[in-house]
Length: 328
Image (cartoon, rainbow, N blue to C red; front, side, top):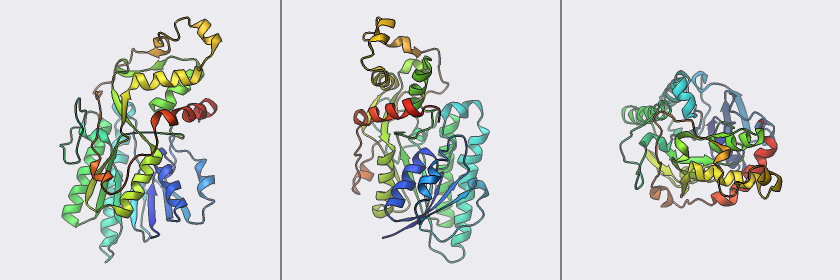
């Protein structure tokens, strides 16, 4: 059945994958984005080719009214942990106040006798805090470790409170680390490729030991569609890629793909094959660094979703993309 959805942050990384997937399904998409530094504004040329797409440039805090729709898919957020540690105000504005504003918009709209929309909100695996062994369930206590994850956990609590007090329908999704073509270059994978292109050492926090579970953004978009079509309202769904490795291992693979069998480079770095530490800057140590994230997503898999993309198969294309587009 055709849906009408608002997608906030539609020009961001995850939001753009969801937007593209919805448009290809023939759903009507009302895109909202304030077009920040991390937005890929060039995507508007692609999306505007679809007659089922419309767009408004807007901060979600300034969104004044809603047209009739089935879902508001909220991917709008400040997401860079390091930035949140330096300056948290923007994170409070977008990640907490923005969600509060959306909840109030929905409450007022439904107060006019409407039974829609449902808020499908993108949270993060980081709200659980780290897990050295095992996997987090949706029912686990939230223990955020940094300002970013604290604002996301606060938004989750707002949604649960508005659902109970005002009977607002919601879905909260908590994905693991997303990767893919089109991610802004402040994130680990594109940042590493960018630094290689600039001939700079790649900064790795905590000696590259933190472990992350990697999930392709297209699998995240497909999970979103599956939840809308087959999921249940007033539920929380973890989304996991099922593949985890240390940040050092991730960047090690990027270096190998970037330089390949470059004999000139190997002559410059005689220990290239045995010791790639020459490409790293290990002087960084992030306050509140989580050791490992891992999620149990059996609830989501029970409604028919599973990840299709494999990290090692997708990484070569990503490296090649950023070698050509690392300035974006």
